[in-house]
Length: 196
Image (cartoon, rainbow, N blue to C red):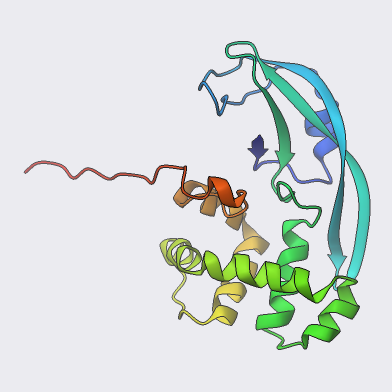
């Protein structure tokens, strides 16, 4: 799949789905650029939070493109849609904010968001799995913060207001929302120092 960090789900239809011009993407499989043709679409569900605890569920069409070079197909996802999950990034961040920053009880979060406590613990588990790399990305963005979960969630929320944290995270570390079997398959960046 290809994640377009310049488009959110509100503008997806105009910018991606109904766009019949050339697509400026790089194939994740073979690395070819500008070699894509439209290859159909599919529907998926998405849940997002518009205002505090105002949950909206909708179905959206996702465009698939085919690479002319390697013949593989790729779904184009907007920046706030989490792969393999119906809950958007804003939804997950709101749940984590209520848990860590507001210190809301799990039972209240379940009621407010109409989700199970198992799902909340899944979000918490995924977040704690990537906690150290979130600290690294936020500190590289100029945030001075401790390793307390509430300060990290607060930093992510503050950065989301002015920019896109998932974009910064994606290009500094592995993608946080990869399926578990792909977590160790992405190579880390290697920095080679210069000679004096």
